[in-house]
Image 1 (cartoon, helix red, strand yellow):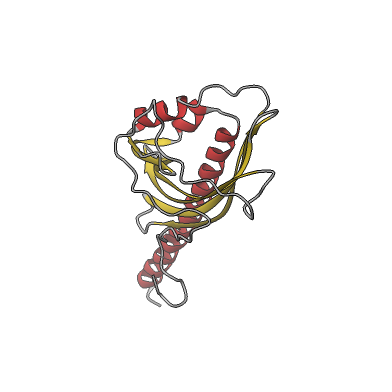
Image 2 (cartoon, rainbow, N blue to C red; image 1 turned 60 degrees about the vertical axis):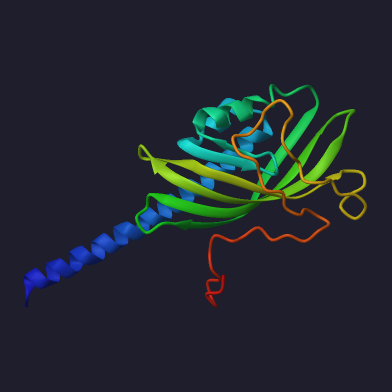
Length: 205
């Protein structure tokens, strides 16, 4: 028996298993990172939410433009201020489709957020968006590298999407972005944010 060949084969199998285990851990870490982001946004924990971004990250939400770099993203988060009494702002993170790069250093995720936003005695809305995000392992920790939110719809809660639809949410008047967002259609118009992956069965884009 060729013991050296057998040891080499076992070493290769062990390396393959370790790689798969690490990929599974990375997959879970990215999923948790995105869900944690949602919980922080729910409760206006803007500093904690900003902490989740990489140093050279990009944030682009709806039509409000692109914000480049960790400090500009923190400025964007702080713009919303502390939560007033009676605020509800749930961003429920759903349906993540996650892919980790072969080298284990980057990842991508498509998911949607179901949004409840409003204030007791004031306006209240339902909303939904699609995320196409990118992640990077920076200093050994997974962080958000690109957060890209495509608005699907916003509607008054008491009318619903059968009777009312808001236009694309655009720039803040008092917080100009680093780069403008190219406007795109929102409900009731049809628009499909591009997938970061091919069809896993047919290979179609």
